[in-house]
Length: 168
Image (tube, rainbow, N blue to C red):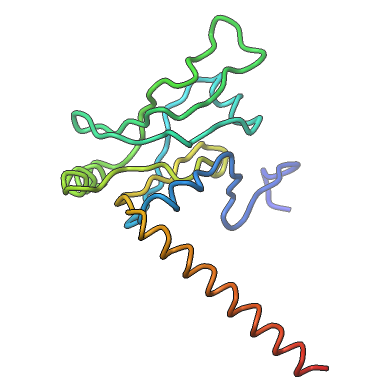
């Protein structure tokens, strides 16, 4: 055992513990690029997230004055919190490098592009948000995506059935 690591469990590899995921965003938007961001949180927010309670459904990110902010992400109040509890839907600051913020400002100024949170997770004990630069899909794009998924699923079923018949 490594010196100084007695009794501690280390995670090798991803070290990710998923808290919340925005599945609807992948359906409603075409994801162009993703960024991993840190979050500025209060103590009761972290405790509430450790219980696995959060919702990204109505969330979006916005760039104001050279800073990135996360809006409408619902982190419920901590049950054992007292007067120090947080507001459930307050805006939270995203932690990004200056170069990343400058890139995002350039991309978001293009017409039709927006910043959408995809996932909220713990990475080595720190809360991270995966934010995507996305373009909204039209209704026919959504139908086409669903059709493609269904076609690939049917093709996989047919191939596995053919393999089973071949073995027998």
